[in-house]
Image (cartoon, rainbow, N blue to C red; front, side, top):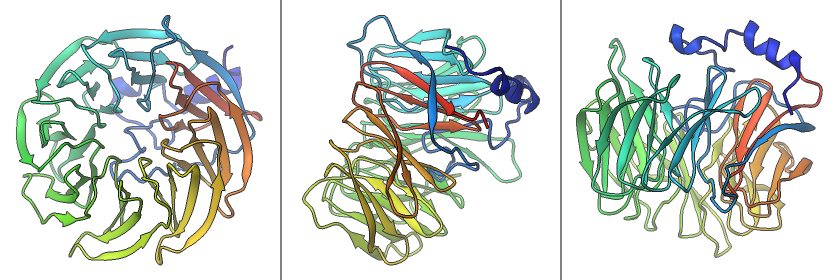
Length: 384
């Protein structure tokens, strides 16, 4: 099923098609990395109001192949990988496959974009690949010493045209690569695997490790600005805003930590279930899924619980917020829309397979994978 002609016309008039060639994206036409922005806050710059309707679904030939990677979207194309190691470009308009590229292991992390028209992603085969967004042709690859499961992020130096692709690997290193050539700019060694993507804010790189530390590095040099001990391993991607970093961890808690001095602002949680979901960081609250089968709304400043939404299975999917609405998937196979204010269910859609990945959104559209390899696109019923 094709999207409405109204939405297709919207993409054209908004200048989405051709953005790669022009090297520019509007805030509403591009979902540039795992959580939508370098700080990994999971907040969109527009409203997407339920109810939604599913306008197309893509299914690979082998339905036993899972898809945990969250999509990125640019210039009318969707990019994501699957557990078979296939990285695809799909049409945002109708879900048709534009091109595909095969790696030797699962692709679980999200890609990122360069201004030169490359899409960059990592694979469980230990390589990071840079492909031409239009053709899928390989431009460079970089080999690490371990699996790469987290997403990519881009750092652009102030006053410079240089771009760095920054990510972590299961060889315990965080790497920064020249985005144009794939040459290593710097590396930083930690004490264990790095599973999540890195967040970038205020010239700093921030990420949690499986060694129980939160790391803060200078983005241009990789110099350590001081690790912060958490005490339990962090598998998710942290979110950061106004000098405070937020994350859940396998010690069954969500924490807020000041970047400057490493002091804990608050700790949340009273159940013995870990957090794999990455938090959405709003002006006044934090939204995060838990393996206690709940989505949690937490006061951003005090760490007090505001509300809980109970699903039917664990919530590893990371929530995305559009205006006053939270969109999040669940292992029960349901895509939920919840109220930011009170956490009540506004709308839901049964997709029939566990949802490990997270929503990617552009103006008027939401894209989410399912763990049977499917990719599904939704739009507002009104087409607005």
